[in-house]
Length: 163
Image 1 (tube, rainbow, N blue to C red):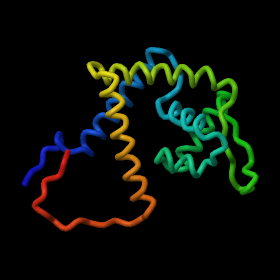
Image 2 (cartoon, helix red, strand yellow):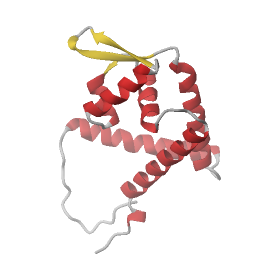
Image 3 (cartoon, helix red, strand yellow):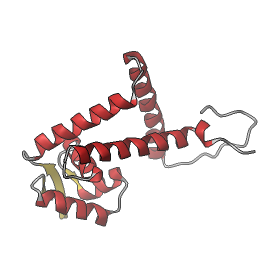
Image 4 (tube, rainbow, N blue to C red):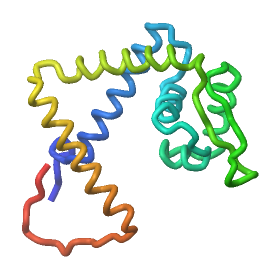
């Protein structure tokens, strides 16, 4: 039996995320931000979690550590982040955004807000809040199960899945 990907949650979420990323790249280019979308993501994550180490950030961003090192080198060279020795592990560094990054982050957030407004055209405020709440619930469900580090494969049933 063939399933329509347009009716499957994972495919739709992936497509929406891909389109949001593509739209951000277009906005960033038009705004002459001079940063890649990935560099912007690194800055935004660091702003949320000052003092995080490189290994943890690589996991959060789902990138290889060597890829992250190159991104961090560029951001540090631009004066947007700083690396400090990790007091808990002398082999590691903790990361923080600099004062120079604050106006850049403000611009990143402005662009993101414009894109989210564009994406939610026609939504009422209540619909936007409901969508975000449901996505948070999905995230929470998946984080909880991922933290348990177990996979329970359900037996095939005749039950129809919700998209």
